[in-house]
Length: 288
Image (cartoon, rainbow, N blue to C red):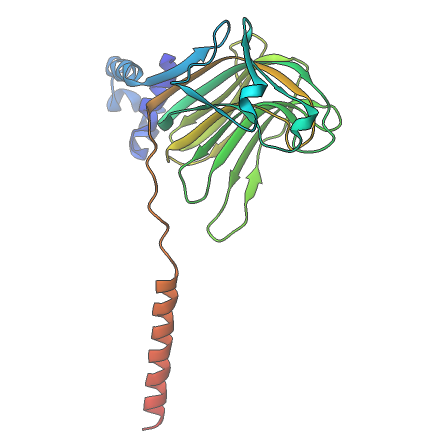
């Protein structure tokens, strides 16, 4: 994990009043630079790291599990990485890849290095390619995706997506403007700092990441991280290679489960009783 990321993690855990002071001259009053550096180094040392370079070795089953239909038949390993191939016969079935066996807590940075070997132009759907997908333990079913894809019409893009379901409402989808590209390799990254999620991409072998979208997503635990080949709901040939994944997080482990959402019927029942009581009182006094 970079020292800059460690600093961001420490900074995000300060209360709001402290964070506002860190941004300017008040930094010297809140925390001397030397102490801040020590705190950042401690945070860096305490972070959990998960990852694997797949070039020349199969995936580690203690860290990852296969996910998606016919995953065992679609995933192979070679000297260049983890290869995932979806044929047209895969149809409109879900994405295929690897999921972390661990959940993530607090701030995190998820990075995947990839290569597109062959992705045919899809006839529909959301775009075909390779992606990082995460879901959160939340009543609103938060989910986020960043992917390198080919979409209907042939556009080569980096794209971002976030989905949430408000209480009592329909699923809401949002994302940043797609970024066009011609490169067939690169890196995808999702970074949460505090309650903000940043979507970032890098072209080819570069480590110069560019943010393509940012959204407020909350502090809840991440219960799934998936690295996958995805045809976007179109019967399209997708042949990709995942070279390496790296995950840095405040804490890796089983995510906390939310208690069942409180039922609304006691509220409505109480309201009904109150209305009946009020109506009865009015009738009683009107008869006097």
